Image (cartoon, rainbow, N blue to C red; front, side):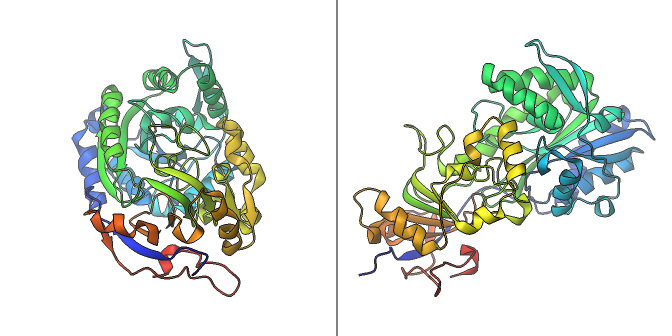
Length: 424
């Protein structure tokens, strides 16, 4: 008998909707707002672009720019991504280019700087930072995805309001706000800063993006600043319904092909792996419950930022070679999550990882281990599952079994294919 579990592939049937004509929907949503009454011809509008990998983001930004031009505005793009890109303007522009957000494609300038102005002091007593280029614009449109936060729970989590803090606050603001969150609740800090930004920083609109479980654009919502908080609460409820999920609630070992900042703020989404409150174990009422995680690579788009690697117990040695230590440390220190940048036990091959990890999972013998293999935490439509799940999989109407169980596809060096997507 093999010392490793055999695996079979399933396809999850998710039910979230998809917008097929993103360009038309952006124009329709923005067209609902009286922007032609609030923006005079010739006035400048800063459009935010963040560091997350958002489906169709270049197309969404371009369509926003085109609509603004249609009402006579002069739009430009500002990177809104806190400390990402190594905390440099050049690094943040590089991230945007990696997503296809270029001046040529979007049809307007990109103005990148880490410089901020201090707008005011919050009632809690800390300064509100705001991107200098955005502050010089006549108006600002905040564009971003609304989704569950990786570390906090509330009726406002990760979305447009957070973009007004961490994104437009740049590195300086992100440092202050993450420190403030150590003394005050996340919802209080978000509401406190966002209220000041909306009141004083010429926010003319927001464009909220919600994705479905298949990493597709599911909903777009253009909102006026006075309705932003209420609408974001509604969008978050929908985003939580459509979040990607693993096909089973209990897992001895999770293999992840890649992590990165384009996938999640924590490299791998804690809402998917069940580690939102504790880096290495799900709390009592949290699901799924994953005993050990092994990371196999960093994404190219993360540019060496390995934030979140510290939540894994094991990794391939090549991951350590891919890390930009400076970028990773800046991001983890800024976010107040130092442990996210720590180093797991690393091994040269996948076989060595399994040989080391499987004996740590409990009483289950290695061939009987409950193992899941995914590409990343955004891409869980098709998952490789160990044979121990076969009976449960046959009972789930949401799962389609695509293959019979077969051996893990090790090559001569003891490694699995780089991507689970490329092997069947």
